[in-house]
Image 1 (cartoon, rainbow, N blue to C red):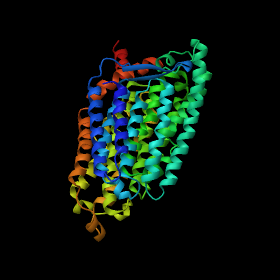
Image 2: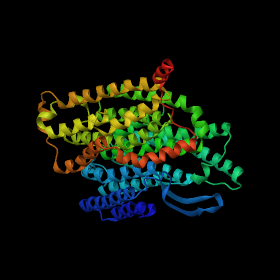
Image 3: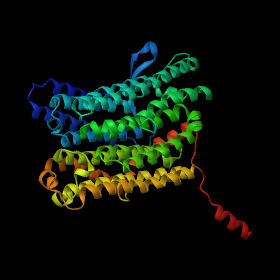
Image 4: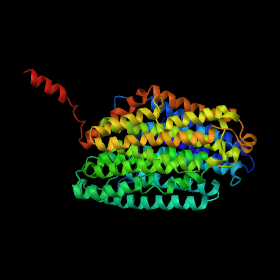
Length: 512
């Protein structure tokens, strides 16, 4: 199957669901789920069909779109983009199952409108990771705002209008900076090649002078830092996540935010290698600040959705730190972290959604003693939390370990400081679990919180299984990711530092 066909499937699904007669809510859900499952299977098949020895682009398509400006419909995937596409495609049907009654619970909007917007969002998520033409990437980057804006603004909580507008404004401002840099990059390519182009492969071969690189780099970096989100460009995220339905929050934080870090590793490093190296110390400093700032604010939250959102700010700090360490361990760990964070954070958001739909509240203080009335629910919540804090045996542990090892070889001080962030993660996750799950249940909790349902288990068990499988057997994903990260290193012209053998050298010297 081609990437274009993979995108057409959810697009057709969105049109079909939206065209269904009013009042056919169950049919709309079933049709949307059917299309979501087909896309997930097709994406997994494409992932399994990747040539693991090839770090370059595969499944390449290129058709002329606007030839006068060198714009093409260019699609292709490498080891980094394919794992993110598969993650997105797998999460969508699970979100559908978990959020089967989200619209009814919200009491706003229509079922067919909600599920058609979700499918439309999936089209743009696949497109933004698969685009090999920078203008096409920008189109998908901005187009994602449309369904998310309506998913938050139409189906969200009491402050949904404020949260949706804040998300939109932050994203649009970031997008404008990227558009300005994109135009500048087009002008540079025209000067060097004789004709302007947005083709990714051609742009990575340009010899842009360092001063121009720095200016263009900052334009792209600002847009990616807003989307990631990094401190201080993160303030839209807690509001957007807290006011979204759990399914929307799962895709927003678990998938869409990865576009920022994906853009850094996939576009910034190969196209602006000199600027990337120049700004790396400052960016790693911001990443370390994000790790601590997100963790400390997560500790102080009373709303579970906001707590998970702030924890993600901390997690993205680790991802960015690994990217700009420029080591193979850091780059592979960051990519793996993007995937694993999507599943672990998705599991947390979905379980919080299960709890809030029963209790009618997301406040931690309104719970307590849940493990006595819903032990399976509490167990699932604990597993999701342990993955988020990177417990050994869970998928996030491998990612975090690789990032820290890869960063330590180049920036040991930053890695040492960031390690403390792991302790803070354990604190806010376990403290939230203690306050919500342990103790004696109140009368309100006993009367409203019941055990997790079979449908809810069908949605959450595959995510937990993936978390454990990738924690115990991460090499399958790393075999796909590693060739591409090696190619990124080659393009940026960096190599891993040689291992230190000072002790051995001194012993040999004394023996002679």
